[in-house]
Structures are given as C-alpha cells and as structure tokens.
Image (cartoon, rainbow, N blue to C red; front, side, top):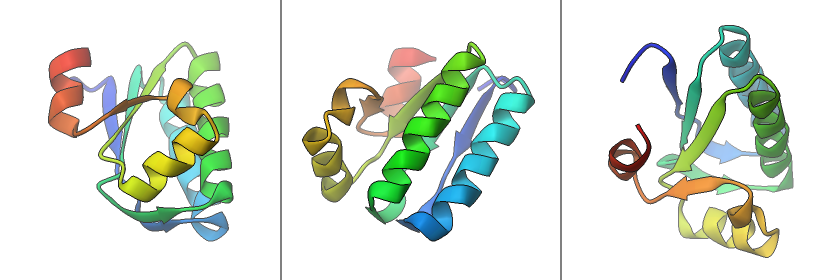
Length: 105
C-alpha cells in the first residue's frame, strides 16, 4: 500500500464516547490529503447510532476532499445495522482487508 492509503482500525464499542475520537482521526487523514481511507472493523464488537453517524459524517468529509473511503471486516451486528438503515447501499463494504486490497487497490 502506498502512503496515500491509510487503514483506520477502531476497536471495542463504537458509540458516542468513541465517535468523536474516530471522526477526529478521519479528519486528520483528510487534512493530510490521504487519497484512500480504509476502515477495518475487525476489532469492533458493537456500533450504535452515534458510531453510524460518525461514519456518515466521516464519509461526507472524505468525499468532499475528493478521497475515497472503504469499509471491511464488519460483524453481523454492524451488517444488520447497515442493512436496516440502508447504509449498505452508501458504503462500499468488503468481507476482509485482503478482499478489499485485491478488488480496489
């Protein structure tokens, strides 16, 4: 992976307490002109609406900077949350980091 591709790996529960830290990390990558941001959810056990909101706001920031954002390794709870909110149509989600690298990078 080149320096224009960065992987963010949140862990634990992505809720209101973690959401602002997550958004700050994404904003720093956007300001550093990162071209591709990958969110690897392999260590996230649960995400609530605050986490989802942070993800949506992050995507808007990434897109407005002309960059791309991909998501990989979501668990069943996050997959269900994406499907219920139709976010599975908004985000490009891959089963694993390896699959994403093979198909997009």
